[in-house]
Length: 626
Image (cartoon, rainbow, N blue to C red):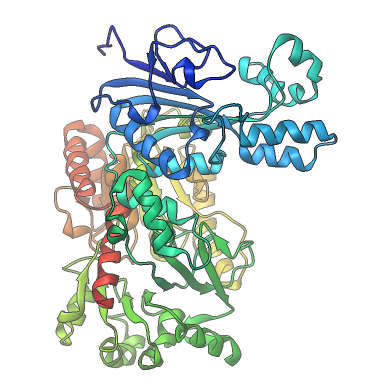
């Protein structure tokens, strides 16, 4: 790899800390009352200008907190533009969260004064006040949203640990070193945050939307658009910034299960809910009560739990009072209600109340998996009369049976196509988690299958195909939720499917079970895999297919859901013998795998990422509301 012999590296807010090999920048000496500045360039940081993609590294130590929240975001966007692809951003600020915790437990008044000075600034000059806070959670959120990757946020509780980061336990031990030691040798016992990240050139950032989303988090009470418009203008979006701000909507999403439960529907609704909340909307999710759920406001999304189960055909299980409580919620003060998936209690209990719901109503049918089942005949005979009360029907494929059903019943005018996708930022970033190393996998090839342990997900189909491959050079990871069962239904899934997978993994040295709740492990599996084997019988638009596209993993699947929408990007097998033969052919032919990878990535990059998809949902909401 060629390297630039003269890299451009900026040290912003250098003060008296001159760094060789950097362009050191600070205010002129006339702006400083105490510090003796030594710089190469004397300038206001807001006046600096460099060409796009021209800077290798931007570094600042105790500069960033001197800018208000809007200016800080403006600077980050500007710095990102200056940085070359994969260029390094290195920022150090006081860690507000660690300082606040230390303040609460401080034993002396002097210690509290020192911490408060660290939070608010030294204040010896007009620039020496701190205007914004930073901690690890905020750093991760902001840098990720503004187009950075490989983000590392670390708290150092004292200068000793910061100067010698590779010496273990200094972060702890240094807290108890007396102030006299630091006064003699330099440093302090004040918590600092170090944020390092690299420019993600593969990520397209809608700067206005990202900044609006972040600044919206600061709003309190009825301030809303007027104050947000002022902040947006300060962030550099011009005097008409208010007209660019999407109105804040009150949105209710309903889904049978939601986080912390893991699954396709759960992930789709979580992505929609959290990203809509990030954009400043007030989002509520109505879902089934889970024993393991500890929080009822998760990443800005308010959760409403109901002790209900079943559907119209199997019967709704739950008290009349709980049903009434749910239906009252549907009739509440919302702008938009989106029911996710038919044949589930949240949608089926809404059907008889659609004419009483004042909000705009949207249904995402998710395929109508029971359409051809005899027990669902009456359900689908009556369904069209309910569908006419919806303002929009969102389909994930132009060719699947749910859209055909709606069109055949005169509902084509309500149809909207919005696909499924992936969190692209997960697949363009790198981390230190190595699934091969963690699992002790030595084989040259790695195959994966990601889906929860239900019989309909076709694990037995995949395992039979894998055995018929008759190869010792391939390992198979069966990735699904492995938490302890909490209901009779979950115990049924354990006995019918998970135990069978477990025993096969025990008797085969090359089959491994992985807990899908460990997202790091799942992402590492995708990125290390040579092949994805998908045996599911019941799908609409499988998320794992798009995740395979994003990860560059060849996708070999049964003809299920909308996989046939993507010829050239997937390999189809109707029997496990066909799957084993196709798997062997793909593993033995790198060029065939490369073709699938290339075509899959083109599909993913063509709009199958959540940032784009959520924007399409917002456009639909605004269109329906007029």
